[in-house]
Length: 146
Image (tube, rainbow, N blue to C red; front, side, top):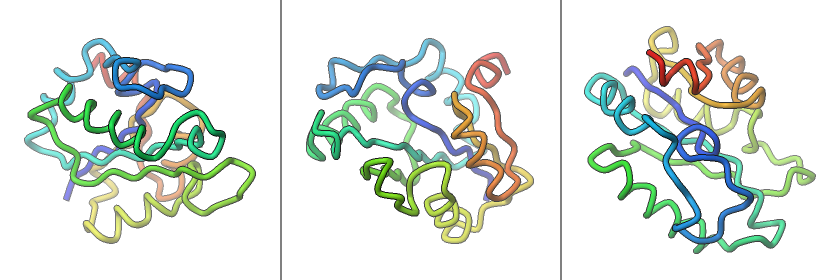
């Protein structure tokens, strides 16, 4: 199975300082159209660090409301599965990017073809995540210009 694994903040949506409400997020310009172009041939996954919960900026329920809103914004595109690390960076959990836990789950549970899959993100953290399994990393600016 071929996959595109997306980061959320700064990649699918514009960066916002710990958004608590759905109306605070905005799709990155051109992302929906570009995702749609690849949607027929790839499975989509999302991996995102969301430490705002542990930092007290928003609740897990708020995060889920934002995610529901994001799903409406990108419809008819759907993610096969979504992974959010809600731990504080100081907790040293295995699921916080750039650690490989969520990526490993995706690769093994869905039998992802590493050589035909990519990670799309906006940061060095996303790039380091790609190195866990030698996946190709594509910066969001480059993805949007494909």
